[in-house]
Image 1 (spheres, rainbow over the protein chains, first blue to last red):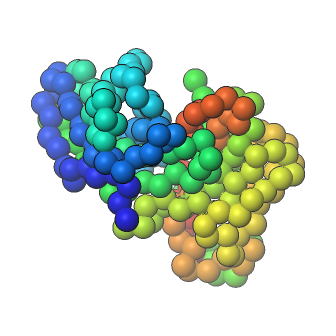
Image 2: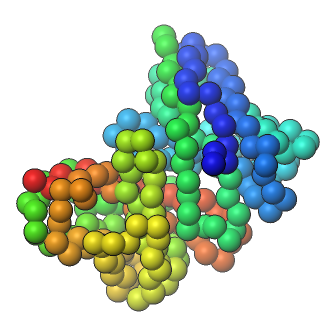
Amino acid sequence: DAKTTQPPSMDCAEGRAANLPCNHSTISGNEYVYWYRQIHSQGPQYIIHGLKNNETNEMASLIITEDRKSSTLILPHATLRDTAVYYCLRMTTDSWGKLQFGAGTQVVVTP
Amino acid sequence: DVKVTQSSRYLVKRTGEKVFLECVQDMDHENMFWYRQDPGLGLRLIYFSYDVKMKEKGDIPEGYSVSREKKERFSLILESASTNQTSMYLCASSFQDRAHQPQHFGDGTRLSIL
């Protein structure tokens, strides 16, 4: 039972914005959307999270649709070091011990 | 920046050995977690701890135990290593009393049991 749906792969040119979609059509009112990424042979890295408002930090922006059924992670100026698998998660404060990573999106940034 | 440090990046042990994996975090986080990550199976929670000397079983605790004697340190123990415990082991930590705080991960220990 996939809780989120992401495209399996995406290419992006260096210096361009990368827009990563995530579908979470069955999300409930108390579930946040979290994004992590995992660079090969490293541990997952937290990127950003949000509930219903758009969020921005030094790494990325998160755009959540008004009905909260989908979201988009935006890497504003992709670099080669952004090549990684990106995971979109749903999580409530009750489930803080159970991060469930799906297959994610393999993003390859090309020169 | 949050720092979660795992004692070894790569480890090779033999079947039947007792194996210790160590994790230290420097952000005064209350919660600490041990996961394993396997191709096609994603991330699976082994054990977690929300306080010193407290522990809770995750989804796959069999064959593992944990120890948390100090707030900053969380150890995973393979009591008698078996080949099916060959995996990438990931430690994570997070705040407990601040809502919606993310988990921060170490770089993992790639453990091979021969």
